[in-house]
Amino acid sequence: QVQLVESGGGLVQAGGSLRLSCAASGVDISRRAMGWYRQAPGKQRELVAAITSGSSINIAASVKGRFTISRDNAKNAVYLQMNSLKPEDTAVYYCSAYSPGGTYINYWGQGTQVTVSS
Image 1: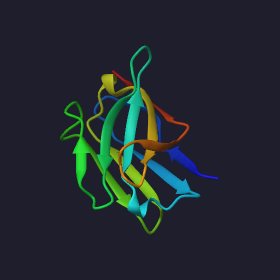
Image 2 (image 1 turned 30 degrees about the vertical axis):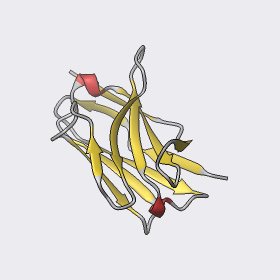
Image 3 (image 1 turned 90 degrees about the horizontal axis):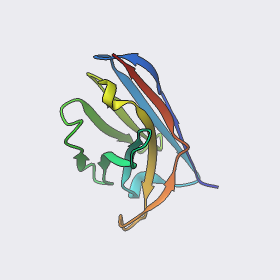
Image 4 (image 1 turned 60 degrees about the horizontal axis):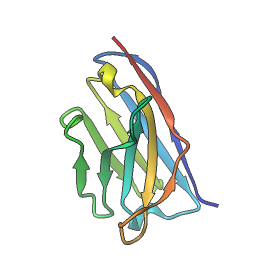
């Protein structure tokens, strides 16, 4: 059974930092692109950052320069380092694993809440 388990969310003041982790089991992520998405109340889920199997990175304009994505294939894990957090970053953050061809998302995690206070 495939599982993506996020951790590291929480409550932080504006300007602070958090590091989200996504631990995968039941699937080898080394050959898959991985992504972090977020969904704020009343809004659609949006891409935050994605990293290919070759470690090419795509970062949303709204978080560029503040967030970074990385992967550790040996640990079967993906990370999202979030710095200079803003209240508008408040959302549930989801880890995702793309299909081997990278054309659609195969798996989602359950999400972790990030709340940034002003």
